[in-house]
Image (cartoon, rainbow, N blue to C red; front, side, top):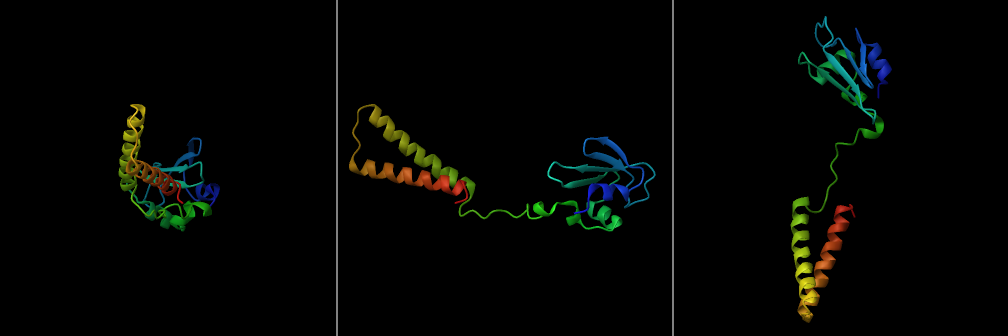
Length: 140
């Protein structure tokens, strides 16, 4: 991680435009008027945008740093997706089905209709599946 102060000191015509925001001349092209926007986020990431069209890769290369230098050590792995055993849409479909089963059982009980042993088994299965869905949502 390159400290923001060090990054800013390597740029020309730096001007602060807000909290954690600056503009400067872009080092990736012959820039006479500042066209590079720099922003430091709350979590320490540094975002770069050249309004003349230079890519972030071109900018960091011109600065002699790497893209990884714009991210704090703790956030370098933020892009790695957590592998879940099921897709979220599949889990939501299961939850919707099991909630419907529970609703039907509750509705029958509210009307005074007794549940058969088969209905009770299905209701217990619905409860088990809903608990499992909660575990999946919590990453367990």
